Length: 140
Image 1 (cartoon, rainbow, N blue to C red):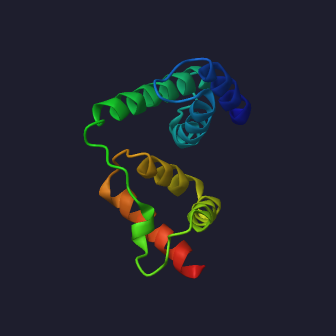
Image 2 (cartoon, rainbow, N blue to C red):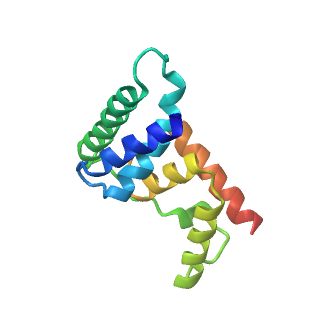
């Protein structure tokens, strides 16, 4: 029942505009947020209302933070994480990024993509992404 409620809410949210996000981005972010907040549902209120309120507020905050931090945003070159590897051919870079994206678990993948797009994350989350990327690229 909870999964169907989550899917219904995501379908309703996909029609809304949240600044820089496409409808697919909204759906992916909403899915991740829903899985986090559904654990906090008290069972008293209707789950659809709870999810819609929680997810839409988090998406609005994400949009606001994206534009508020526009001047602070810095694009990170993940190739610099592993200095001893040659990264000159473009095919190799694309292969490395594909490997990282296919190997990272979803929460770290989301943080990786946010960092790659210049969104500032908490140091602990940024360090977790750096460590995971280094492990993936050094195991290759």
